[in-house]
Length: 68
Image 1 (cartoon, rainbow, N blue to C red):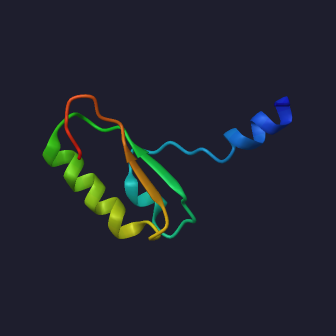
Image 2 (image 1 turned 180 degrees about the vertical axis):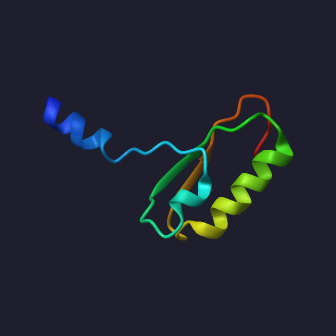
C-alpha cells in the first residue's frame, strides 16, 4: 500500500465520544469501545441503532460481556 493510499484510508476513519455526531452522516461501520458495563453498552448500541442507516455494521469491542 502506498503512503497516499494509507492517508486516503485514514481520512475515512473518525473517532468520537459523542455518538450523535454520526447522525445524518453516511456511516458504514461503527465499533463501540465503551466501558465494560452491560447497561451502558446496551444504551449506546440502542442509540446507534436509531441514528445509523439500516445497512451500517455495528460492532462491539468487549472482552468480558457476552453479546451473543
